[in-house]
Image 1 (cartoon, one colour):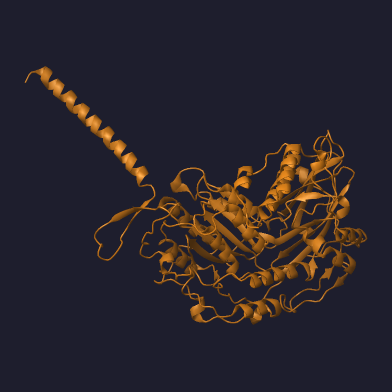
Image 2 (cartoon, rainbow, N blue to C red; image 1 turned 180 degrees about the vertical axis):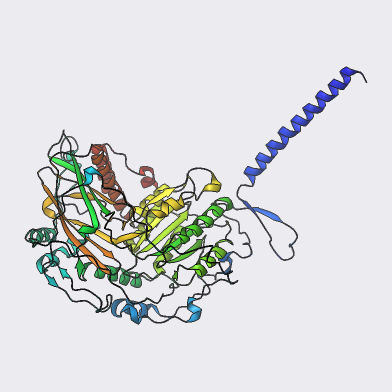
Length: 633
């Protein structure tokens, strides 16, 4: 063989090898995409040594993996190890009439964790409960440093009820004068929620120019608010050197109650009533020296008759309220649309989030697809044993099946809520309901109407295509926030630690902000979040430029202790914000109208929404979704 022939053979061989490598690479890429959502399962004992693959399509039923927590649940999707130790009627009677220390005791079987295999003992060196609270130590910005608010001092001690607060160990506290308290606690004045009930106010863009006849009506002031304003204005704070400190009230140790087999609206109603009674009708103490309260504003030069403001309430960095013990439930989507690589990342993130809880917090974990399963039949305190049980339970979760979002989040209302402990739910999902109630508007409307602020809902989307409309509106209507991941799928839960840190340490829960009617304020959001150590509560509003002082009442709970203060802040001589505050107010008002439209899809309300949007030049959020989603009449 001559040299030319040998060279030609080598070139042919190289070309064949290169072509084979290119073909192999293309085949691997195609195979990777085709098997993206496939899982390999052992289907039966006869097929022990064989593997079959199935594509996770909505119409296909896949045999679940051995050890999957959802495989052990009964046909109704309830935990098999969660016996009911009291009837619904007994629970309603207990919440309404009996003190917490008389709650029925649970049997050992009722509080045992439904873990088939006892978890291995965790060495103390591997994990330790966080015993201390982290307090942020940062100075208040110069533009937020305002004169100390005027606080209306109480004048007489009030009695203590035995059903929520113990008669002993409670210091003598005072309340607002009877006239102010009676007026401020009226239904319209205190809550200032539901519908669009705005004070009498006509922003400059509305009611002028073409189309003025279709402008939104702001004239809906309340007689109760006027009475509350007059009563508050008549209160003159007596001189005192220092406001009384907020001393936490300790409750008797509560016996964890089991999760009910189904949501009972009577129980939910009694729980909301208990929270409202503890916050609004029990003796309260002032707390102004534990918070920073800032007021900044901007006047539109084209319409100088109105000023737009931002009210910011934050925890005092050096003199904060004591952090409140919480009940936290983590709801983890384990459906096929999540895929196992995302689920693996989420399992690890939930395990780490549990380890950041405080030693006096309680928790539970839920896995959901078209059915759901709770890790524990009742609340469990954070300790080495419960954390190890959660790790073992989470490690068996695999991704397949459909997603019933509504049935799962509704089940949170079957978990008992203690009035003194905020219940915070963290939903980790792609937000795509494929089973049960699938319309986003229906889910938002039905859950928000039933929950009514009882449970704070926080949602984390595991992918960029997550259902933003469902998660954003659901959390806004239920004291929460949302975010979503954008990036590599195997790092889908990378943002969860930073997200849950925002609401790790609440200091004032079930907060309400009520403005004096004389200020003619239109402010949003109507229902604010809890106040946390790590972040403020921002309320955006508009009022006439002639208003010199802003008067409002803030109520909330610090554990079992009700807190209430009357604030009166003066507007600064010069505006401190830009035109962005006007846009921020308009956006929040649009969200409020969208939420009202979701609950009541009235065509007239949609016309008002579009008119307001054009006047302020702000886009309607989720306008496309409003056109295609309808709710039940």
